[in-house]
Length: 338
Image 1 (cartoon, helix red, strand yellow):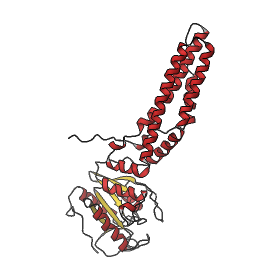
Image 2 (cartoon, rainbow, N blue to C red):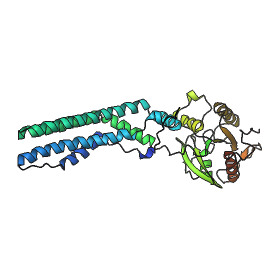
Image 3 (cartoon, helix red, strand yellow):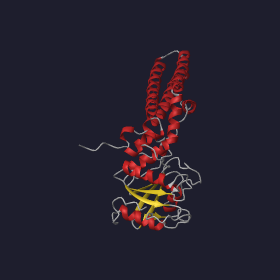
Image 4 (cartoon, rainbow, N blue to C red):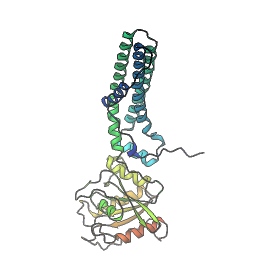
């Protein structure tokens, strides 16, 4: 049975979606430049009206069609992007709004063609002008009817454009842990990522991406929002993004601890989250790393690092690379040393 076809997308390539007034303004400006042909003034006036109505309909239709086609088929997205789309936007609303905009596109074309034919057959100059204005009014009304859908789609586009382009086949390390344990600082220390770093919880609101190279291996490193120790069904959208990255992307998870507990969580609480995640994602390889060794060395058998000073970073990177290439004896999930 052939594998299902998958849509690949650069979310930041989704075109900005104009509001209804801006679409009409663009379309009317183009229509105003359309001119008719003919031997007499009446013939030129009639063919000019046909050309303007046709231009108006064509501009609006092509603009709306571009918006509809730009959004991917949700069912054909890779699992990670499909999960993320469900987390970030109301998928059913997006589907409804895309359908509404496509309905408008079809009706605009229908009206444009019908009025163009009627104007073209008319021999009454006064009636030509009446029908042109009527066409303008009815087409404008159609576009205004989908104003709210256009605004919601633009809001969804802005939300989705924050999603980084991730290589789903690359060796990928996902950094996880509780809020404020130093994940963003760690990712910045080991990769090209420049996530926001601050001394308060939940700074990271969405995933960010960086890369690092060890020898000939290029490793993709993903910073995730902080997770709290609670069941999957109780996670908020920010935590759901982290869980989706663990489930769909991670070849290896670096679980970061803060032994100083200045993050606001005790070590037993952090360990309990680690155990929960290891049970929830049994097929994912985990490496436990204690951060902030410049402030406290717990003496445990876990790897130690200071994302602030860089101490231990190279050792962790080498271990990550070895596990990703299956060259280390710890190719199975390493045992935690208390």
